[in-house]
Length: 76
Image (cartoon, rainbow, N blue to C red; front, side, top):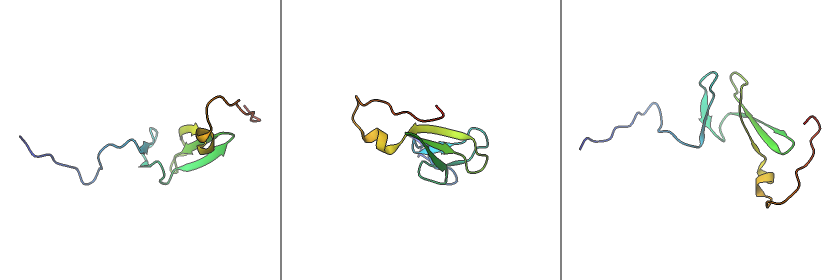
């Protein structure tokens, strides 16, 4: 059996890390990403190249029980 080795310069893969597919920037989900609120969504963009990385339901929206009606957002 060979001992496991770890790369100190690059942490192991984690689901809490986001990666920018455009420029390669990476950071924890609560790291240095630019997060903007738009209606009931949180839009994550790269602080280096401004590429949209993710769009997720706003935390308050995720906390509400299912069965609610979707809200209207101007610009949709």
